[in-house]
Image (cartoon, helix red, strand yellow):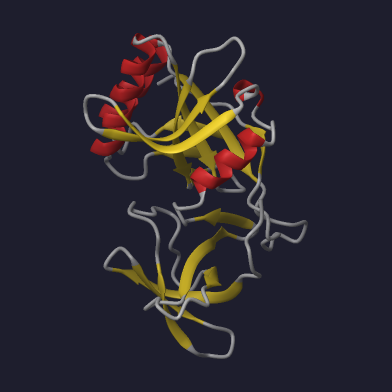
Length: 243
């Protein structure tokens, strides 16, 4: 999976009103880009940090630029566009790179389910011997000393998703929490108990109830540490639940 067009480098001036970011382009021009991320983006908005934008040619768009990547530290890249992880996960599963979820012939997106009126990110069906798999995808970009954490802010929505996944297991299906690790400096993933302790409790409860928890890291950078143009999920990383 690749970005459809070459990205445009700039320097972050500020993020504000959650969905807006002012960026200075190499020629000195300042543009306002759409920031497609509802989270706190903790650690992913360094002042004057290098960022990369995509540009849409759709004349109907008010903001043609979209913030895609940020250099969180020298040589470390993170993808902050939370519209990307579902497509990354779907592509990796369809290509057979997620061995735990191989063998399904049908993948559907945004299927309604659950008593709390949720939409599952991916529903896998058509396996010869395994039940349908309900896959909830989460983007991981919060990094501290090589450790990834989720969430980066209190998430009642994420807590709801865990309850829904546990309910699917009780009905006899597979349920999977899929962490897309969109940060090149992350070596493993943990629940962010210091940010949302209730989420951490529910995540461990979900694991005990039979929810499968996976984490796969995206290939974002080339040998020089700059964006490679790729977003593909290439290898799994461990999920550590011990407190």
